[in-house]
Image (cartoon, rainbow, N blue to C red; front, side, top):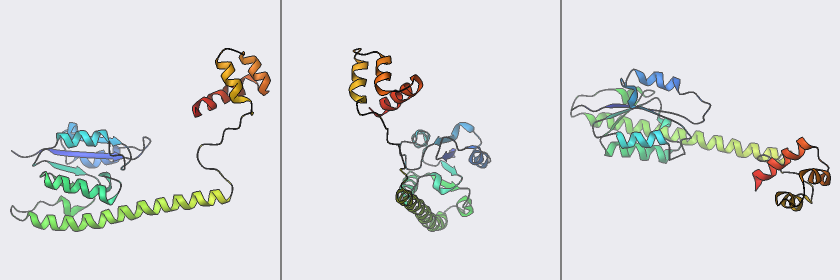
Length: 202
């Protein structure tokens, strides 16, 4: 019995669109129910679509992906999955790597294995290098911002020094909101905005 063709597509943020990868896979995976997708970072091991696909796949199946970095974010993770698929007898075909798409005569699978191993090694190294470059640039950007006195991340909440004590009294029903506002000299809109920001930090 011939295996099933599966497809996997992933984008790393909720705003990115899956359509481009989906269109690329449609020519190879005839049944849409076998195309699994995630909107999650490659470093997120708990990708639900990916995990469900792993459970559904069996020996003799083929997995189609648009590019190798869809499998994971770093070299180690991609290699682990490729080795897992190999061990389970699942063929991985990567549309962006034409050599992985070729069919070979029976008994010559070692040729494709050899080519794939070389390509996989090269591509995973590149993916890892790119990731490290991005992180390096981010670090440099944060350092530059710090020297310029910019604070990245959650802004520090500025509140009157009596705020915490008055907040507790107000929440305990000991003082009314109006009294609280008068004490901290805030208008209603500003007061409730600050309350919301303050409660988010609790």
